[in-house]
Length: 463
Image (tube, rainbow, N blue to C red; front, side, top):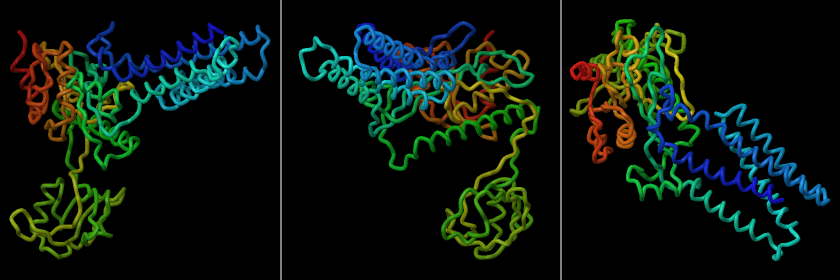
């Protein structure tokens, strides 16, 4: 049985090492592998590692089975091994066949671990040389494992933000007809529910930032879906803005005003609907929020006006009543009682191929660097002018660079790489500088627009 026990405990030790590695996966980020692969791009291979743990447990169960046969033990004691082998095979199949469906594979691996624990109890109980009635070795080991799991995986009432991973933007996105020219780097942070290990890390590294969980925080599944949607939108905006900047498309064009929500007591409730796109007010075109505001300034509060809108695939003209509200100067003005935003049409005549690593959940924060990357790929000789560039910031349809989260942690992560400069939203310059340590040579460059990024690179070209 010794070989079986060794395999069981080896698998358990590897499982806890894997959990610890997942929490500290940012540490080796500066590592660059052959072909210029970043650490982020290699993590996908590590998704298969839990299959090795299941394989070791299966081998342990087989060794225990063989030991029982040699000693002529009862068949009843082999039942746990049947479940260890069965659940281990199921876990291996799930992990190898769909490594990115982590919850399924890891869930089956947890079941596999539970059957391993049961078999460890059976093995100790069947040991004729044991002195105690209860299997104290296994009970003690189980208590230690549960304590470790609590430290490493039990959620606490805080969120944690800590350094993430840098990514090669030329590997992440390749535009049709483009070539790789300069070195451009994006950066991510980890922002999730904290566990006790994170609290301990925050006492050692001040780059770990804990904040109380807000009372209105959405469920994890809902938050994940929102982040993915924001990332997809950011990629669309960045591509359109970049192609427009190069004169290869019309870029991002305002084409109306989207109705996002309607107030409970709104005068227009029941007539206007969320999802409508307003294109005119009393025959005055409304291509953006500003033109809508200007058109409404001529409307008398409480009057009924004709609104041209697009609802689904239908173009409609509706008579819509208005309400009354005070503006900043205390003057009455006409309102519909709806929240709105400018709707855009994105002209994208060239395809962009994205390679999204598993660990890149991301969000809209890579928008500015994505736009810069597309411009670099489509510009002969590029736009980096010999500089190794990193950056963060959202990109708006007008080319402005917006603020993002975790800038301090991002600056810390970038400073550990070979990047020379770090573009950050101008409003977050001080936060980025706070992420640098004594001796860091990374240059923080605050910007407000994509044009400023391009101009800075031109003005600071290496000879």
